[in-house]
Image (cartoon, rainbow, N blue to C red; front, side, top):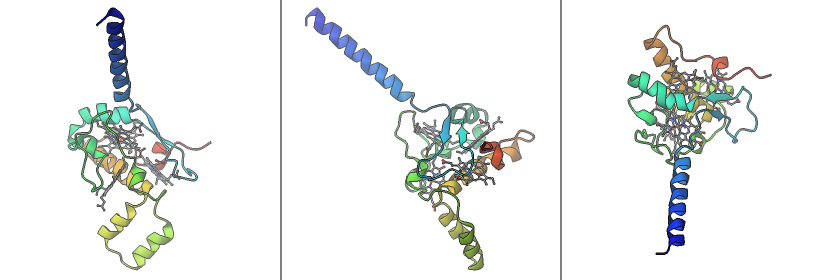
Length: 165
Ligand code: HEC
Ligand code: HEC
Ligand code: HEC
Ligand code: HEC
């Protein structure tokens, strides 16, 4: 091989490594949770500290993170994706929890009147994007607050949704 060709090979492989490096770092530390499926966000947009949740909290409160990334990410059957890696493709919650927003009040009332079983209510509730989020986020935060008193993870609206101007 002549010299020029060698230089080309070196440059090309360096570019590949670089691209791989950038790809592996694509999960931002803070993700604004503002799904475009919504016509309008009634509440202030949650600035979710993905980096802290996935690294710092997972290490410090390992007991709450038995399923690793799978505490929040799961497959089409709801099975936790415990061994997810940075750079793996991740489906957005909306792809499965398809209905934007929370369960409409009217519908909740109907469920109560018809005495729909709690388990069935939960299933139907989970079709709604904001309900799936609230269940996931608040679920862990409640467990945390109970165990790590007096420390507090947010469970009230404005602690996650900043007040709109
Ligand atoms: C506390 C919950 C939580 C944990 C733990 C968590 N994630 Fe996430 N992750 C999210 C949420 C929420 C989103 C945004 C999903 C959406 O937009 O629908 C997300 C998005 C992502 C994305 C897509 C980023 C983008 O820019 O689109 C990747 C990749 C990802 N997570 C990887 C991981 C990996 C790897 C781990 C474990 C090391 C992990 N996550 C742990 C909640 C979590
Ligand atoms: C590939 C499809 C898919 C994706 C993507 C997905 N889910 Fe789910 N999720 C499911 C299925 C299926 C279930 C089980 C539903 C049931 O039991 O009725 C489930 C269950 C849940 C539950 C209930 C868990 C429990 O304790 O019973 C929560 C909360 C939840 N998902 C939140 C989320 C969040 C938040 C995201 C995005 C970070 C997400 N899901 C992404 C399919 C998905
Ligand atoms: C598996 C557990 C777990 C899940 C799931 C989880 N969190 Fe948290 N979160 C924590 C812990 C632990 C703290 C507080 C740590 C502390 O105070 O030291 C926290 C703190 C926070 C805080 C305040 C501090 C900060 O980092 O901004 C916000 C806001 C927050 N979480 C949002 C969310 C949202 C939004 C979701 C759902 C997408 C979510 N969390 C899901 C464990 C979790
Ligand atoms: C632990 C954090 C957390 C808490 C506490 C919380 N939410 Fe949310 N909420 C979210 C996340 C995350 C979403 C998903 C937003 C998105 O991805 O578009 C959401 C979505 C919503 C939505 C649909 C989007 C919109 O802005 O219209 C409404 C409505 C909502 N929440 C109302 C509330 C109300 C009311 C409370 C208090 C009773 C509350 N939330 C408490 C995290 C939280």
